[in-house]
Length: 560
Image 1 (tube, helix red, strand yellow):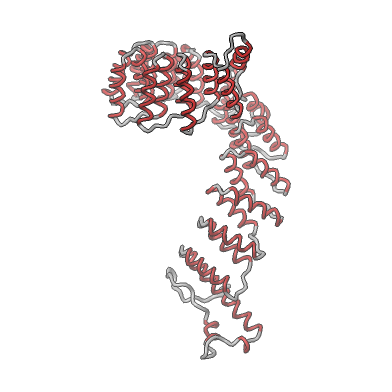
Image 2 (image 1 turned 60 degrees about the vertical axis):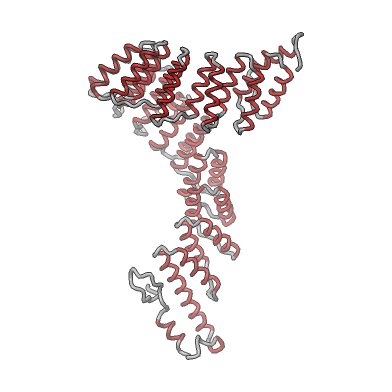
């Protein structure tokens, strides 16, 4: 039913005009609007009702035209007029502001309507909550949930799922579980998506037993898990080393009820390989084929990675030949894994020949291939050979990265060729590859482990001069080197400096400092650092604490 006739043309930015009937009433007296004393109650109600419709039409018009500020102005005029405002007016208007992401104004008008005794309807509440998740306004979301609870409303499941997902992403799993519990109490049962989100969140928080219990709860409530739910559980548990539990809860009890994807099978195969149970991994590979899911490149790469990591190179070669026989095209990751295995077995020359003969013709050699082999040559103190490979990269159009330079610089520093290392650093920066915190920390750690403390100090200072702030790992590398050469007072200075710069010590820092102080027999200071450690919530491992206690009770203990 059309209640208002407008004179605005389609596409025009002119707001609707008053209906003809209202014009007629308004112009019946030449002296202005109708005199309220001469109007009946029915006349005034009709007049106010018509004005309300006009306001609503103008607001709608501006909203459709995208002129939200004008719509706000008209809404304010409407609320300040004699027209009676209804809850539906606020619901629609707050809904518009939410949709347009005008959250501060939406909150303002929400509080205003609440003060007038109005409330949003459940759908608008749900939409408000879901949109607030985008800006992570947890306090307002919780207030809306409390207001809904007071009114006896329960958010729609889709809105709750969005909120639960946000909480899990932000590592606020306890609050997510509390919201879920309140939801159940109010009669809003979760769906498969709800359980999938919570299972993923629990696994992320390393609460694996709770994740398994959540899975069982879902099954007991008659919900049928889909592939997404299975994937969340399997990947989460396998990442946490709980591959047996992952297998038991899925394939163990769900086979025949769910068509598992390659992603699930591959996660289980990878989990069993990491646990050293390749027999079980092979059994799952066979099982997936009999259940209509062919092993893919990822499946074989997982098995190949296991063989190469375990230096089972003959098995790895057999596996690659099998992949080629079945028509599977090996990718650069497959080949690089085998190169890594050869290098781990101290066979860099064989790795180089494999790269040239197998990968080069296919155009698959990349910076990772070269970095792996260069690293193996440096490890074997064959830095000149490594440097030749570095030069070869440039000739073949493969650009070195920060990792390449880090490996070479470490290698030349270890053999005492600091001049070559300096040239490499200059070359690196001239190519636009700026050293980062990881680069400097790696070099400092390497130098300290090889007893080159002064050079390490110089590199550390260079990092500070370039405006790169060291983190706790950077400080730990240098503190470790200083303590090893009995320069504990300098290590203590770094310990204090790192805290002043906003980088706070971790468990490793305390262990290094206390160990150094014990060796220097500065037991009073060691005990003081131990107290600071416990205040930070860290605990000293058994070996160091026993050493400290023994030193305290020894006859030659000194308390300085």
